[in-house]
Length: 622
Ligand SMILES: [Cu+2]
Image (cartoon, rainbow, N blue to C red; front, side, top):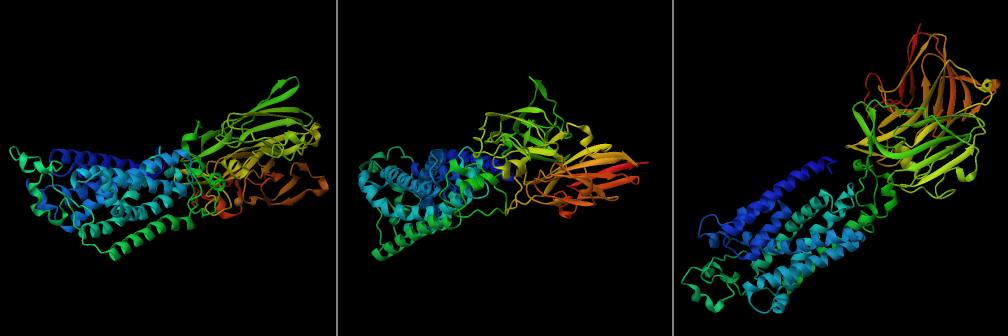
């Protein structure tokens, strides 16, 4: 799925890789005079490295003019390319096959790497070197295995020394879709790994070709008619006559390498391999598997080190856009009153949590977790003394519960996951039922991974009217103000958290950022009751109203006795807190209600129409 800029690049890359591979395959089998094993080597490496493989093929191996392949491929650098191609084709094929299989098995990353090394080495040695090269080199299969063991070991070590860190850092990096073979980026990482592995393995291969330890590029032409018996005594060989330029790189290699040289190179490439496998484990958690964190995309700036647990990564990961099941209209509003059904005298509400796309601004949409497809969730209005039943259904990709913030109720109705009730699994339901014994401004929210789920929008207002209407502190107008912080960047929505990488960049009142927030309209002399609710997760928002003080009449749902009510023009609304304030429209005009942390009145650090985020306006007319 195309959800990140890199995905566009990868689509283009693999189209180019496909075309490059098709060309190399066609040219190899119609024009180029070389052994079949090398034809396949270039085809596979071009499949893995795209235009780079094509470039190497054209510059180092493709016969430029008929009859010139022998001279053309003679330079050492080209022979080195041929040797590396041959190694990489076998090893990389083994590694990639193993990587796809181990990802599906859910093995930890460190074990993946070891399995991939063994698979790559085995594939390279037993199949690409020994089996495919037998035609060229003669001897029995096991003689070939023995002879090519050390060169293959050296080359494989160098190759994996380059490929392993690429896989470790990128698969366990920000975009862990790279661990999942069904994602394009997995194949992109494999391709990059092969490219880096090729570069690291190239010098060792040049040395081995020079010392006569490995074959480089060879020429093999179809047997000219009538010359069959000339090469007949060496029937394994496609052609004998071309070896004029073959010198010591002919079929029987004569190596002049010394034991100390071989020991030094073998030892050094082994150290390179160990470094490539081990050093990444100083930085990323190689104990995790694709099953733990595969597919998660992390916010830039999150600290993920070698001991960051999988649960911490999943908690802070973006909502994958493919999980969205409903796209709300750009002008849809949250906090819509939900009318209850009456069943046997009980007020019954249905709350369903699901993943939606929600516009916080006309041109900024987030992925959100929402009750009944809106952010905030629907407003539940009940009266003190009511018996209420809430049928909760969880359609989120993770478990969830609902907590009734501030209410006195039976413990098993309170909602904390794993404490008072089992978390409601995906597709599951739970029925909350209780008698409402209080009145005032309350709210409900998720109590399962609240740091993630509430930050994605799982909250809503619960307004409880007093049984005796005279206990209500009266105002001409009422307005509920629910706060939220969002982290939306690089086309993805992450849960806003006071953590490295988790800081919010958008802020909403009732699910909308200024200038898309609601407008309160009133006349001079009228009063409005603002019910501030700290439905947000991270900050204390000093909510300030322009145009004169308000009277604080209730805190956390509890109505203050008249003597305890006080005037103020700013209330610090902390997470979980509620303040009911009465503000009087004294003068006509546009009076702001806004947070007094100026960053919270911007949209991604940008002021639009004079403000942003936690800003709304009270428009007072004469
Ligand atoms: Cu604020």
